[in-house]
Image 1: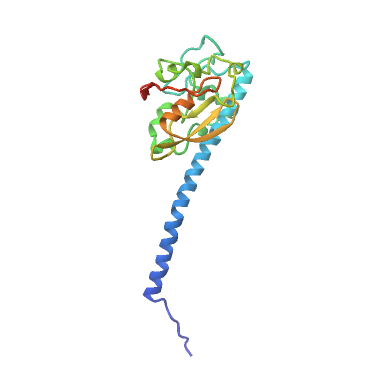
Image 2: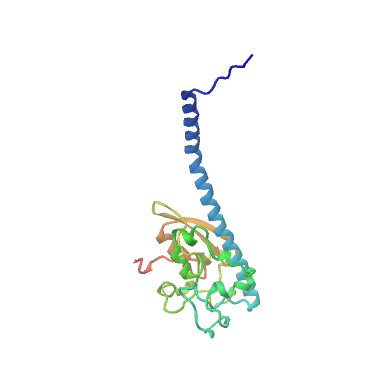
Length: 222
């Protein structure tokens, strides 16, 4: 005797589709946040590797920070610095630390930046910034007490509060608040939620770890 099979009705199919759509709507933002968090963590992990490379460099050069440009957009072309240790023909910080980070090129880029929202960062050679005066860069020159190149680690009185590297710009924004990662001279890395103004004042903290109080460059004067 042939069995009788009952298929799905149109209403049942529509109910199933509606349930799937609701679940997708609930879960999709979670996946987006998880992916963004993973990118942020990758940026922090990269900075941690730069911090390790910096410590190795400092140990090699008698406690001195690299005399090197903050990025490819602001190279340091002088091989005879007034203080600190020269790095020969190397003119950027990421080149100075290249051998001390296992010759890894992938860690130069925050994945959210490279080829995505901020492709212009490819001009600068990496997604981060190092504090050194060079080639008329008005940003670094505005805050000379934030400089590291030409100085020794012993000149940094608050290594846990003085940034050595920071992200060049924000990963993402929530309104006017952005996400920034900073790597400090003692090697620890931390991510902050800052406005642009707060980021500038904190990332250009002086060597004694005190944040700046006034904006001294084109973003505004106070």
